[in-house]
Image 1 (cartoon, one colour):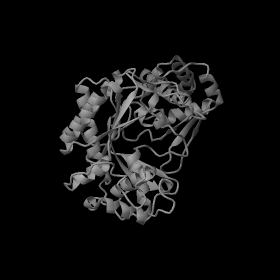
Image 2 (spheres, one colour):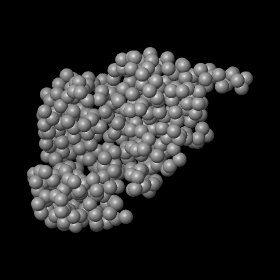
Image 3 (cartoon, helix red, strand yellow):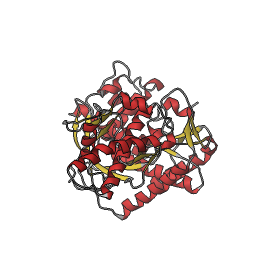
Image 4 (cartoon, one colour):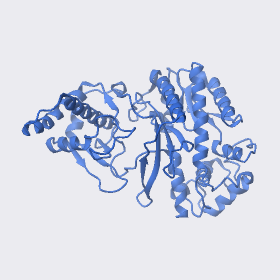
Amino acid sequence: MQGKQPTQARDMVKSIVDAQPERSEIMFDPYLTSSHPFVSAMADNLAFPYEHYWTRRKQKMRDADRESLKTILRVIVANLAKASFEGLEPPQIAVHLRAAKQKRTRYDRNGFNGLQKILETVTANHGGFALVKSHQKGIASALKADDSFKETMGRFTFRPEHFEQAPGRETVSLAQVTSRDYVVGTVQRELIDYADTPETKRYREEMATINEALRKADMRVLPDGGPPVLTSLRSLRRCFNSPDGSERFDLGGRLFDGWWETLNRTRRKFIRLEGEPVAELDFASLFLRLAYLQVDQTPPDGDLYAAVGSGLSSAFWRDGVKQVVNAMLFQTTPMKRLPKDVKELLPPRASASTVRSAILAAHPAIEPVFERGLGLHLMFIESQILIAALLRLIRQGCPVALPLHDSILAPRSWAATVEQAMRDAAEEVVGFRLPIALKQNN
């Protein structure tokens, strides 16, 4: 099991998402809506067999139930339209099916408890859709559309502004990993329906401020030959982790769901914020510097990942070294094996022991921090700094700032202001003015 822990650590670093790799790349979003007439028309069409079902039972459908039905159907069609718009073949969405009587939590949208029954009825009475149920733990079911749906979609022009998110989604989430299958690479997380505290209320207010600023911003991606980008979907969530299921908010805390987070790095040069190309400002070697501060040591200057010797100091191996460092900060036992997807980023004959030894030799002052399971704690500090920087920029009138874990994307004319805000935020949170690097996306 020790050799598997780096994979778990990197999974924690990358994102908090539902695992459904065998089903679909896109999860069903109950808050996704669309203003396109096609979506409303298709939803009305799908509602007919469901309403007919009630008629056959000689029961009159209540107006509230009818409106709830049409809302759910519009959301379903909007999700499939989004999958088609983004080029997914075939258009499909992964969906977690839950019992109608299952207790509603802060993460559920009102009126969506009957989703499974509606999906079953629609797919049974409409040839253009199929519901593929999953019976494997950690794998979501999938709603698939056939070629006729895609052909119909092709008759209409969809633009990013046709998609948006309905209000009411919880922006502060807390989850626990309940199971993990290392063979197939699946993870199942259970959302925790926590009780609000002054702390969580403050976090939610901060998210409301950030999301309102993002809602007003002018952002787009120039045509570059790649898949279209739904720049209208920009509402963020702050995601916390609880290893033991307790209601705590000091682990994790990164921001997710921004369209720019999944955009390939090579496409960032085509982003336009308020009509300008972007500047990407990054906290240099942030995790390692935060580790130094944990033991009251002043972080060294320069690129801390490049400081690792034993033939690993070349920029060519930097990404591999960084991933191993992050894995060592997350796991709780000495690393015995290199993660498979990291091997290709390191010299051919590099072993876990040699890389580990080189990292510890390069940074002896923070050896007590490695392999103590502090990664999520460091991630929380990182998130606190980014949140503080974003709020500063909003107060200073910056028209748009996009958080990207340990960096910020902003209009180039605002680069100096963003850099200052990031330095000030770091000093506010950790008492140290962390160095900032300006990345070139040209």
